[in-house]
Length: 200
Image 1 (cartoon, rainbow, N blue to C red):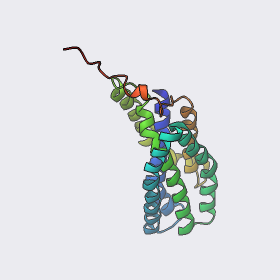
Image 2 (image 1 turned 45 degrees about the vertical axis):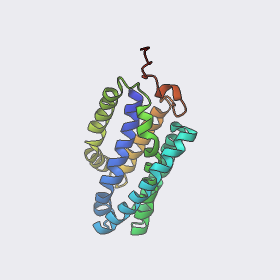
Image 3 (image 1 turned 45 degrees about the horizontal axis):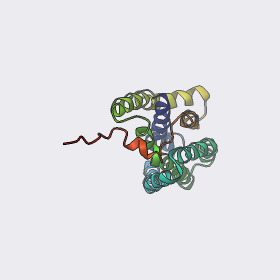
Image 4 (image 1 turned 120 degrees about the vertical axis):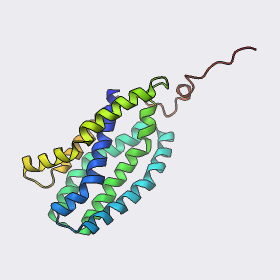
């Protein structure tokens, strides 16, 4: 359950920063028009939508963990340079590039995440366990995302502080991913709750 909570923390932070906060960031910190911010976000979202099913299928063949770990490692590597570059040279093209990359990596992560989380628990406790892990993570790290990001900007004095929150989320997810059980090819797990037929 803790591993699942960590994965949801990562996904929740990415969702709220990349998809909710960045248009505000583009307007208030980069001083770009909102129409450009939303256009960049829409194109980034389109890339994410395309990648989610592709990476979901890919995880059926190579496993859930390799796909998610790849996305999280790349998140850690590119987030700070992207925010630094966009902040130093704010433009629609730079913002669009950042959104395509970040949304793309989020799509790679989102492809297998739902299945990976569900596969951690047998069906008899799956709904309860996932509800606890998911809702705690979303409440704390998603509901307070705007607060954390605003506080980080004020505390650090830099407009690229949202990158730190994204990197924190990626680090938490990466740590949690190593504790997930890989069940992409575990056919027996899918039928553990099957009922044996009884003789007439």
